[in-house]
Image 1 (tube, rainbow, N blue to C red):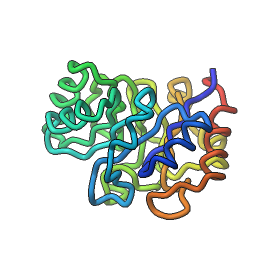
Image 2: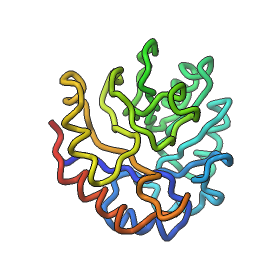
Image 3: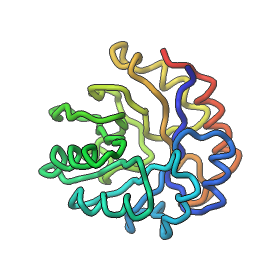
Amino acid sequence: MSLLAKVCGLTTAEDAAFAADQGADLLGFVAHPPSPRHCVDLAVAEAHLDRAVLVSVAERAEDLLEVARRHGFRRVQPYLPAAERECGVALLREAGLFVLLPWPDEPGQAALPADLYLWEASPAQTGVVGGSGQGHGMAFPPPGPFLLAGGLDGASLAPRAAALPPSAGPQLRGFDAASRLESAPGRKDAAKVGAFIAAAHHLEHP
């Protein structure tokens, strides 16, 4: 089974349509105004709801749920405060949403249930919540199937997959990339997007 390719940080209908046409399995749309990849008009995702993921930094899961329902998202990638994380994730899943749960590479996290995890660099390392474009040491794997994220592009997928800890390799389901696929912040480079998707699909689930 081929691994999944998630193209994240999409801001325009043109870039979203291109990634979808190239075969991206998941398309990430960021709802977080401080981010250079903030999608001002989430309506651009509505043509791709079969694979769209709402990526949101929110104080309350209820706020994220309201945005997801307004635009028809079926999948969410929630960045919630630590005190809200467990109850918030449960609320989103109870509402019928597929939860792609961010899993920073750091110790001491509760093994919360999720549909899929996103293994990325810790905010303690990067200074930002998600979307840093930085790799990580792959020292603290998620408790279930995951997408690997952090400084990825088409050329780096095979080496990073090969470097996974033996216990984590069987749980790898695909890759997430954003900043390394850009021509400018928030705008995708067609060649880089195509190469990333092709490289992910060339690899197979261990």
